[in-house]
Length: 389
Image 1 (tube, helix red, strand yellow):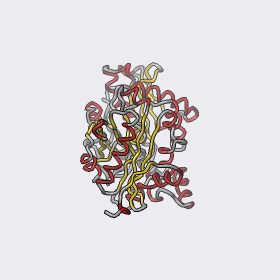
Image 2 (cartoon, helix red, strand yellow; image 1 turned 90 degrees about the vertical axis):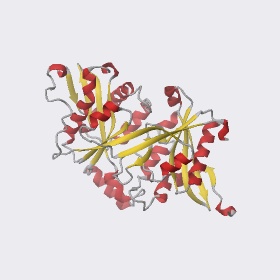
Image 3 (cartoon, rainbow, N blue to C red; image 1 turned 30 degrees about the horizontal axis):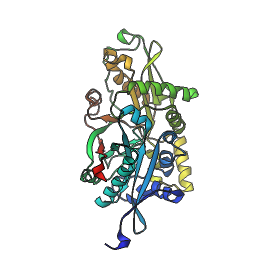
Image 4 (cartoon, rainbow, N blue to C red; image 1 turned 30 degrees about the vertical axis):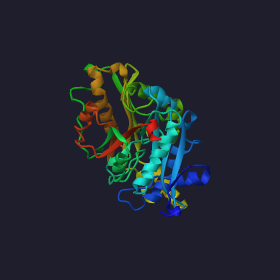
């Protein structure tokens, strides 16, 4: 191999290299079947320390793989003090893994991230998650040709085999389901017809939508309920106030009252569901960096709410109903209410994910209306030991 052909892994430094890091996936994957470039603007919100609240507590290092002066891959390494405290283990994360079809490039990038994490005391490397499980989570295993979905990653079909070749160990699989909605969709019948609001076991139960005049207060209610509901679920991390505030600010232009279902018992929140429209519906044909005309099109589509799909990004039930008959029907009630309200919106499909493959109760509920997952994502672990040096 000529010296010019040698692969070099460099830590990202400066504006130009960061721009390359953000734009690289759409340059590497252009033309691959099923790939749709996300907006660079959205990726900046995810990756730049000045825009993502994660960096107020966590740290990260980005790496580029260079060959012949050209970037051929990228990866990130992150340390999240909240995650370490929540998990109770020195776990660091890797993410933003995108490369050419070359095992040498993938291996070198993973080694670079592992070394950075090990040098800072981490004992396990887990991912991909960018920057943690409250961002883009998992590697796409199945579903590359399906409609891309907001805040969900895309990886080429050959990447999982390379992960295994690099010694990455499968830890958990995450599933995504697609349900059909709209005025012509069949009723889901998730909740027995004998159970009605204001009667019997549901006599003290009420539901409401999103109060658009109090978005940040609504966000705090949602954050507290989410952290309570998901405190023991594998892979989940508590949402901080900064993260929820950032999420609300980012989603504000997209949200409508029908996107949210809050279920209350005697006036106290006990369950929730939040759905967001799929940004790819209005941006997919504009590329990662739209022209001025493209931005005008995007704005027009946003104002007209020209979305045809959406994703349930948050769903949960208060821990005080755990193990009760009422608690068992709450997820079904939340999804049913969401689908009823969604009939006033233009969505034809709604994605439910990520769902742990091991979460059989939720899977059985969802599979009553969507028998098979249509996408699969995988989370890997790699022990960080001195023998890796």
